[in-house]
Image 1: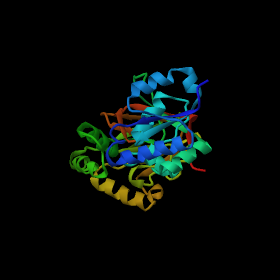
Image 2: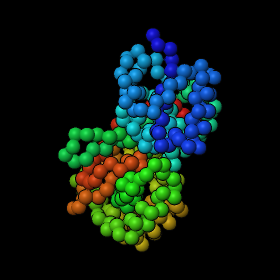
Image 3: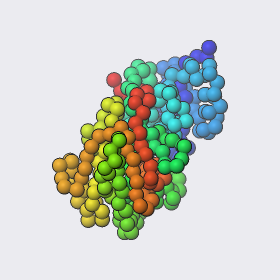
Image 4: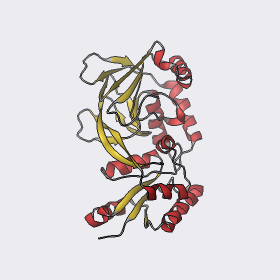
Amino acid sequence: MSSPWVAIQRNPNSGSGRRKRHLLAFVRALKKRGLNPRLFSRRERLDEVLADPARRESLLCLVPAGGDGTVSDVMNRFPGLTICPFPLGTENVLCRYFGIGHDGEKVADMILAGNTRTLDLGVFSAAGSEKETRFVLMGSAGFDAEVIHRLHRSRRGNIGKLTYAKPILGTLTNYPYPMMRVFLDDSETPIEGSLVVVSNLAAYAFRLPITPDAVGDDGRFSVCVFERPGSFQLARYFWQVIRRKHFDRPGVQHATASRVRIESDSPVPMQIDGEAIGETPCEMTLLPAALSIIVPE
């Protein structure tokens, strides 16, 4: 039987530069507590190690050390394993939601305490494809997804908050705001809109409270559909969102569902957990109690 250990999957981009010291301090804190950390930069090497049943059985938790994209990558590659994210990315939306900082001592204490929460996961699938991708935060179609697609096409190295400025301005300049049809659960009557946000947790980039009612373990998505297209309408919706007044305003539809299907006459970009994922048509379903995550007590 292998001794208990902690696997750390490092994002080579997020875990470099000034952020590297946080990661090294975290590794030292784990060692100080006798938790036997092992750091992986190569995804293939971690895959090889966790293919060993004995090593997998003795694993305390799997640590995605990076941003939300690293969390998404790890939980999709190793479904069923307990994770404890360590924030080294730009937004770190999941860690911010649970109050997990980059203080290595505190995160090591969390792992030692082993306080876990079980979350639902979303499952994204494009129409006509058998591939499924899990997500923990949210998925969306429309303006914000187009920004992320543009960002990823032009990405070079680390992403900072200012990196979003150019794709946001470019999208504001020429995004056509195509309309979508959103079907909830078994309903055949769609909600029509130009921006769709499907949330598992009440967490979104830049702390925007788009779906503040999402809780992550109730078996339901919180779905927000912004109906009217155009940059002026987008600005109006943004102002309503930051004031938390959008749910009771004309032009905004809010509902809950465990399955969401999105169709459109022309392809609309999609994103899940801040990563470009494809285009409509697509479907998102809920997978109850599918993720175990270590959180602060």
